[in-house]
Length: 534
Image (cartoon, rainbow, N blue to C red; front, side, top):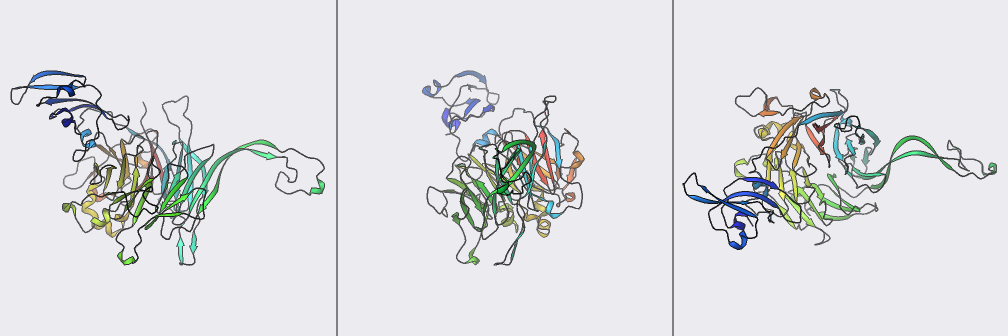
């Protein structure tokens, strides 16, 4: 129900402030609006309001101004006036976050080995650990150091905590196919004890890793020497009680489970369920549901493979579980559609519960439309109310209650639309960019070319382009916003679209779940930025 319908009035004023509350489905407003039609007495009596008479500047007649200062329970407005469109009308000044350089990890060499290229980045649920995977099959985990008492305004740096080889190159002899060791995805499991657990996957095999600390070692075995050699039982004359001795801290990474032989095609996504017992994995045509304790079988919950492969029109590009509802998951396709499935409806979720797709704008139709509309990443918001999708040119925010069109669309690099032919020739048009939410779902972030990354403030409709570069790698140096000129006369601080380096790209980004700390991967370097603390 719209606010105008609630007041039986036409609102032409501006929003003074918007306060969002999570009390069920209620929202709270403080709004000033001009009322040209009478407000029913029973409605007015329920509001803490004040009225005054002002002279209309346009017509010179008196109008009633109703200032609503109470807390009004509202439902989110339906289409065609989504809630976020109303929020865009807020005109108050806000303090912009100033992002500054914190750290950069990786070698400076211009000649980068293919195995060193970062292929995924992921914070754990507390943000204390940051994991990266590369094309060489390695997983590197960084741990945030405690904040210094002498400098409370400075956050702790991320230093290497553990490095291990997660996957090795393999060869499928039945299909004469090489299986790369490249890490496609890393997903952390919620921490339940002192150890940490994460899932890592390459194209075919998923592994569950346990990362634990050890600062004591056992000594004084009866049948084994301290160096590991076994003793002759006949020489044992006394019984000793083994004891633990302190030792230097050692971080161990050990594989606890290996989930293999379940995917015919390359795995593109893994997602841990909110029940903390199951997870899903998806490839081009199928999605499987696994139990973390069972490695020899999984349940196929989506299968879009046609009987005749010549009839294949789309493939699965990404999938994700709902953060709160263990029965709900979504998957996206190469046609730009998103399907939401409910596992309570049937064991096989080939028939979706909801279908999200935006009608194509005929004005933007081109030869490359089918390629650029393919969704490369899909993520639920932390609240579970929205989901975000990333295609080649834009980010779209969808309300799970509205399937017809997204409630927000952000153009990431619209200036590249005129360069699609060149991007097709050098295969850049097939790059798969990821996207992420900040901790309270108010800002979204994704990568672009020339080592640029983009942030979009959902509430105030502001966006900024920043650059990850070693030229701005002085500690606490503030990042300057960058602008790209798409044509015509170029301003002094703008960069021409023709001078962008398409070999420098940010495909993988991650946002600290509790703080304004972000991590972006540029080829073999990991940049960490944070907001400027006063």
